[in-house]
Length: 267
Image 1: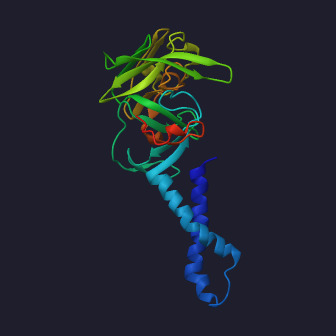
Image 2 (image 1 turned 90 degrees about the horizontal axis):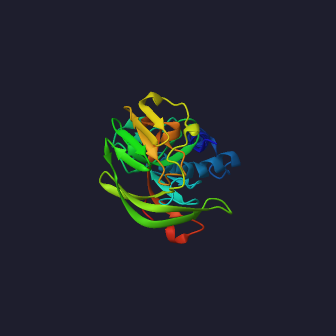
Image 3 (image 1 turned 135 degrees about the vertical axis):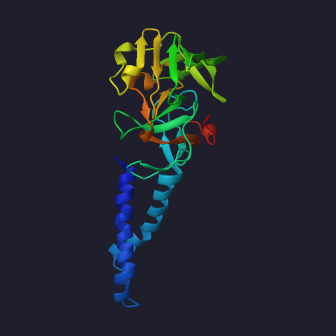
């Protein structure tokens, strides 16, 4: 369901009724007469819908993490907030940018519309910006020919399903001006060749059993999940167009299973 579109339709309907009542119907009613329900209810809900619509469209929008592709940074069940204006002001529903503010940088956690189905929102980490050459071979990420520094940070265990425990190694990866945690499972190959899709600018990439090398085209970004061996990301379905960007994830505001995660900053 396209919630922004539903919200916009409700806003237009209630707003139209409010305007008609304010300029026409109100003048014709007697002072002691009661408003009909079809005027009273839309008028009551209109300011609430307007506030929610503006907040979600231009300031912050809540999302829920449905999978483990961003473990250990984000866990399944995390409710997060996404800054909608960091990368520019966009028109609601059509997502057309009207004001430029900033561009995504390497290392930032990005929410975007899935290139293969824009009705679905994805969240991944930006590892390559336009013009970069991204290489991931034998579990080592390199940007423009320079391997990113990895600092081992112990082991990591999580449950992938009810009965499946996954054992991995945790690392701190330094990309750009900051660092973040990732996990790597040495028992899993760096790339599943059979899972690679056909996508725009696929000719910019070279794939083999050890990994891949991709040149990021203008107006696009390359993303990976922090759970490097448990993520469907740009290595499989391609680059993220700038027009698909929703915003920058910045805060975990709730998790029913782990209240200690409330208020965690997303880095």
